[in-house]
Amino acid sequence: MRFLSMIRVQENGQVPSERLMTEMGKLIQEWTAAGVLLETAGLQPTAKGKRVRLRSGKISTVDGPFTETKEVIGGYAILKADSMAEAVKLTERFLEVHGDEWELDCEVRQIEEHDLG
Image (cartoon, rainbow, N blue to C red; front, side, top):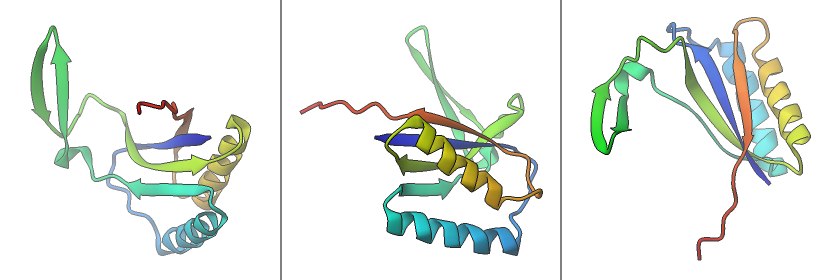
């Protein structure tokens, strides 16, 4: 099964420390080799983004930043795990790497697997 772990952060311009980048690099290498990390990335600030909306059949586009949002998705990981419990354990390990430098929340959700062929 595949799971999406979305990292929610306060958008305050905090930059990862050298220690965090080193430890995260090690974790990414370990998980990639083990086949549990399928993809991961951080996201640019909302100031560089756009929000595309559909309301009553009409599409509109709004430029960032999205000041009404207190927490934003700061990054994501697509994990391969046998269960939700295993995906949560992996996410907990990801959070532990951050130590006490960050205040983070992660939302873990299973990815729907549909055969559209």
